Amino acid sequence: MNLLALVTGARYGELVGLTDNDFDFENNILDINKTWKYKKDDKNEFGDLIADSKPRKITVDEDVMLVFKELLSALPERPHNLVFYSSASKKMVVTGNAVNKALNHVLDGLELDKVTIHALRHTHASSLLYAGATIQYYLNV
Image 1 (tube, rainbow, N blue to C red):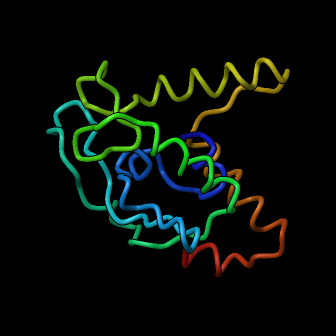
Image 2 (image 1 turned 90 degrees about the vertical axis):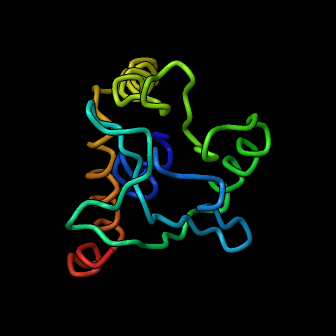
C-alpha cells in the first residue's frame, strides 16, 4: 500500500477501497473512484470519494503495476475483491496503524525518519513539483 501511496498520491481511504478491477494492467492505469468506509461507526462498504476529490485515472510506472499484477494473481479470494483486505480487521481492510507500522519498520532499516502514509501523499506532490509539474496540474489531479 505504501508503494501505491508514494507513486500515486492517493489517500488511505482511496487505497483501501481499491479492488482488482481498478487496475488496468494493459495501459498501466489505476482508477481511483471510491473509498472504503473504515471509520469506527461506518459499515463495511464502499463509499464516495471525499468532497474535495473526484474520480481520476492515474498513470502508474510499469514496474509498479507489474508488482501489483503479480500480487493480485497470488491473492486468495477476498470479499469485494479488496486489494488490501485483512481478515484480522473488523473493518475488513488493513488498518492505518498497521500500514504506518510497516512503513516505519522499513524506514528504520534504512535509518530514515519516521513518516505516515499521509506524508507519502505530500511526498508525491513534492516529487511532481520537483519534476516540473505546475501547481495547477496538481490541483486538477
